[in-house]
Image (cartoon, rainbow, N blue to C red; front, side):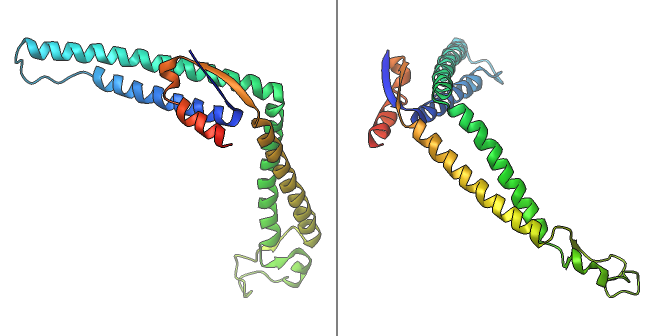
Length: 200
């Protein structure tokens, strides 16, 4: 077994690489295990070659499973650390705040849209066919300057809250965590992970 000690943020990258390798191995296994179209039988060598292809397919499938289980083990460590460090709670808060930011931006676009402010609507009494605006009427800004000001202030507050939560999550992701992997599996991630963590 190989023990690697990396930051929690790097552990996410390790999990992604392990998952990518598991997918790659499965795709190779699946390709080799597919039904083979044989247009003519040339002899025992042909049968032996296809039998070897089947053996290799199953071997790659088993390797893919090992990488998938290693991925799950790393994700379990990440999940445990997220809970211990309070990151999961901050991530939930950040998700809500970021959704609120999107909503406020959408409402602010409405407050700035339209061609006629609500308070000026009475100046457009004749909106019939004879009106210069035609039967389609005129677009009115329902939200006024006061609502626009409130939305802008709230948006600024929410953006500051989002930045603050992001910084706190980054700080909590910094401390290192130990991960144990089988040697051959670790060889796919340990060199890059170690050098990257040292750089941090």
